[in-house]
Structure formats: C-alpha cells, structure tokens
Image (cartoon, rainbow, N blue to C red; front, side, top):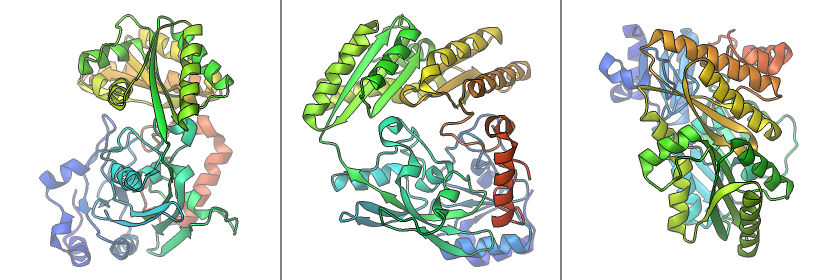
Length: 461
C-alpha cells in the first residue's frame, strides 16, 4: 500500500523526484532483507543524501505518524530491515563518503552507507586494520553493521563492531541531529550515549556518520586447517588452545554436512569423511605467529586431528580460508530456502550444543548444517529447507525453538551477531528476562515516544 499523494509530494520536495520510489516493481527489492520467508511491501523507498535530508524526512514522518524503517544493503539476517506496512523505507546507501582517515589518531570517519569492505580497504592502504569482518562485508554497509553490532571471523581476538565505534552522528525521532563520542581514547564524561544506539537496530535513531577506531596492521599471519573424525575432539582442541593462552585471530568450525557442501561447491580438497574441521589463524609479530602456529598444530594433533594443513603462502591461506568463508554460499545451493540461524553458548558447552543441534535435526527430519565461530561460542545452525512446504516449515519452527531454548539453558543467548529484528523477538524474553525487556521498552518510549522508528522490531510496544 502506497502513501498518500500529498505525502509523496512532500518527500519528493525534500529529496528530489529520482530519490523517491513508489512503483511496485521498483520497491520490491526493498521489501525484504537477507532473512528467509520474511517480506512486506514498502509504502515507498527514499534515498537521502545527507543528514539534513534524513532529519527532514524524520520530522515529516513524525508529524504524520508514518513508520520509518532504515536500511543499507539489506543483508541483515533477522528481519530487522523488513518494511512496515504503509511506511517509509529510508535507504542510506547514498551516504557513501569516506570523510577522513586520521593516521595520527588511528581513526576513520565515514558516512553510514559506506560498504564495510571500503572501510577495510582504506585502512589497509594506510597500513592499518579495521578488524570487524562480517561475512557480508563486501556488500553490507557500516551503518547497518553498527545498528546490528555485527561480528565476524576475527571476533575472538579483536572483538565486534561495538569495540571500534568511537563516535557517531545520529538523527533522533524528533529530527534532531546529535553527535555522540569523540576521538579520545579515554572519555568518561557522562553516560556513554553512543553505546545506546549500537545494536539498537534502527529503533532509537538513524545513524548517519560513524567514527571508527583502527589498529596497526599485523606484520604476519599464519593459517591452519585441521580435520577431525570426532566432533568432540575438535571442541576439546579449541578449549586446549585457549587454555594454552593462545588467542587466535580466527578459530572457526564446520560440521560434516557443511564440509561436504563446501567441497562440492569450492573443490579445495576437503576430506568428506571428517566429522569436524577447524580453521585457525594467528597474526602479530612474525616470531610469535610462528610459535603460536606450531603450538596450535601440536595441540590439534594431540586432540586427535586426522590432518593439519599449514599454509605456506598468502595464496594458500586464502584457499584454506575459503573453506569457512564459503560455508553459507555452499549450503545455500542445497535447498530452495536456506535459514541461517545464530545461537551462542559458553565455549565449554560447544560440543554439547553441536550434538544437540544434530539430534534436533534427526528428530524433526531436517537437514541442518552447522558452522560458526568456535572460538567465541557463536554457532550458525543452517536449515536447508523449502518455505513452500508448510508442513516442513512448521518442523523448522519447532526445531528452532528447541535450539534456542537449549542455548539459553546452557547459559547462552539467542543471537551473537545477527540481531533480534522480527525473526527472534519471540525468543528474547526467555533470553534476557522481563526486567531487561522493560528497561528497553522504557528507553524506546523515551527516545521514540510516537513509535515511528522501525516499530515492531526487537519487541512489541
């Protein structure tokens, strides 16, 4: 359903005719994100080019009680940028400038629509590193990464998006534009307001600029790939690596189904009989990298690794890393619908959680491939299904609930990096409790009293 002609006329006046889409064939690509089986036609899609235009759109929306859903490239995996009926989709991809790279303070200032890979490339050109590396970084935007607090393969050693946000420009629900944070490494003046908006999924304000921390680029890196006949042995190897006071920059896991799919997809020589595989990477000073790589190979073999391959060149490292980075693409080829889920448990419970996912798949007659960030306990059970098969989708729903309930029982959470959005809001009360949920609702009512910003996401009013 479209907005009224009068409303559309005002939006065209603010943004210009080419920056307001209304025709059904034009808005279809903005009616869903990367989450399977969730979609809603947009009332209209608008493309602001700067923060003042965003502010004018928000003021108009508030005056006319129109819901606004902000989005970047739409790669989210929780339904966070799925439109609201008869609302405005505020697409920020035209805010795409790198504004400043400050080598003296190790920061980079970018607009929200800048693609994450572009941030990484600008940093690398200056001999620096932007560590967060979500799987979608070649297309996802930095504003979306901040709104979802995205993680990535390097999260164990380097942390997630939140750990690199030093400041941001935000348009509030009343159209006010505010700057939060600064370039200071230390700053305890008042509440850390920028942190309120990180991970808020567009429900509290619209992020238009982000000031990010960079770090020196590591001098060396080494990549290893270990295969195991027993999944428990892989989990024990992970625990032993951490206990040895080694913090790899990457410590990733693939189960048997995922290994088989990746090998069929990428043809990189993975053993099809392996029950589990670990991708391990260490970076830093060359001498330390050599020692840590040697110790990780030793620990993997001590814990029953059937094979350990150590990359001898950057090209071979990239080939081994393909085993993990292509996991979702490989699985997505196997069924009409691929539902990539996201549950996190304490590292000590990983083997138990992976076994449970396998049992749930067998019980509900579903094919589930599991991969993820074993170093930080974040797993991605991936359902290979068909959303046109209503009976099977019902089994998927039951299996999903069982997996999240068990993760919570083990002291975990229902999302480590994908966010809550629409897909997981029914699981949120069990994960955080009513007290935390009520605090979130109070914050939402304070910052967005008219409930126009991404309403219905994370929780119901």
